[in-house]
Image 1 (cartoon, rainbow, N blue to C red):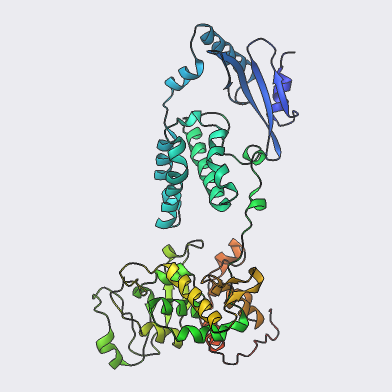
Image 2 (spheres, rainbow, N blue to C red):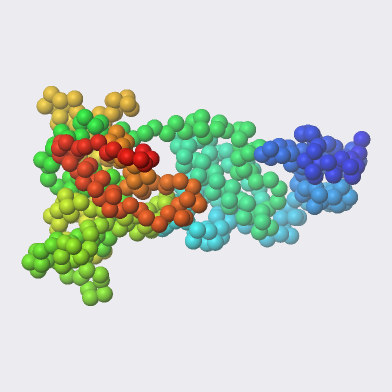
Length: 450
């Protein structure tokens, strides 16, 4: 039975049942109906034999391509095949064709400005150079199928699911651009719903994200005392991480220009003030009361949030920073001994040595019993602070602000002007006392929200 306009109209409205509907006129014209998200999606296909091989030619979708138009296209393709001409090759020749590598480069030129920072942009393009381009970078975009996409994703889907998921989204975006730009037609082979979702396990089932092992509350004071007995630039960086609750990368990439450290004593500034240029704002104020001690991390370094983050510096944090050799404004506060940025592995190695040394002395080390007794790691120190703030009853929003986490809805964040920097300063002073093993009073909220 041949198709009719009523059936095609129902298909275009998403009311036709899933399946394959043949036109039955000998041209190989087929109307296919598949699931896309919650709706049914219809498109034209023509099944033909070219040089002894069966191929399916895409002819567009209703209602843009009507039944009459689809039939006309199918007849024209049949005529070409009868004359010994491959309609698919002819179509490609008539259209500008680009390789997937060229599509990635063109899309990247357009979209790189939308990426948060230079690091995000580098990660974006590097993911293609590492996983995709060596495999099918030279293949034309119209020839890429879901099998090509699977060839990239399957080896890393379960072992590196977070990276694989981002890579799939990026490939889908590139192929979507190629379709809109007229370099390919048909469905997007990197699309998840109704496509790869049927061939790969859900990310939520394979990406079991494990928390970072954290230092336990009862171990904090002895760990802090143990750390204070050690020397080295990595030790100082680890101390500042613990005092501020900042991320590892935020501390290791800190520059002197981001700091305001009033000393309150002019005589201290005579020999220690770095030789800054006249165009550079002064790093140190003349008096302790002119400006508060603060660390301002610029938006370009704030990764996920992409917003400037202010961290109040207590007197203990200030003294730690002032004890370090100071250089030019753009110099790193915690440089590696041989130059460049200090490696996170330096901090990890320090914590491992502390753990092993404690075991050798007959202690139980520094472990997280909630994560299979694994050794505490630098990033887990943020969780240690967050647990402390929760136990003492500090306001959730204030603790989350200190950790630079997004709070509330996008609308709520747009109306919030204060970042509670001075209230957070008092909280961090109490945190410092806790690290030193001093008594910390529980916060009591009267008539307010805990």
